[in-house]
Length: 118
Image 1 (tube, rainbow, N blue to C red):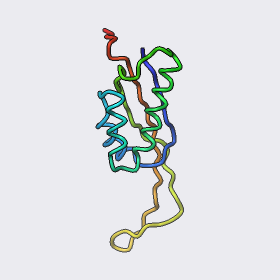
Image 2 (image 1 turned 180 degrees about the vertical axis):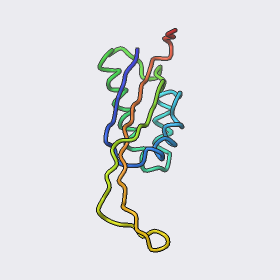
Image 3 (image 1 turned 120 degrees about the horizontal axis):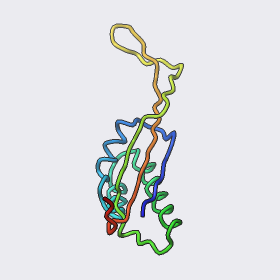
């Protein structure tokens, strides 16, 4: 069985979120939640919400599903739209850069690990 959850337009840099996603990819769901709770990064709260949403989607599909048997099969962070703000940031040699507000899209797929699909 497979369950998917997506979080779109989440605040923060996708590059920094990929560092956290790499920690949980391929792990047991309970282990992944423990890692997210004790990782000192700002983006872990958003990723934890998406992972819990995937668990809730799996329970909605099959009420008898055991959460302990699920693993994080696929976890991807894609970049969302970048908002260029009017504010400027000082740059070297008298230049000025516009501030960029980055967004990310997080997709997490969990699977029951006792089911092997070819």
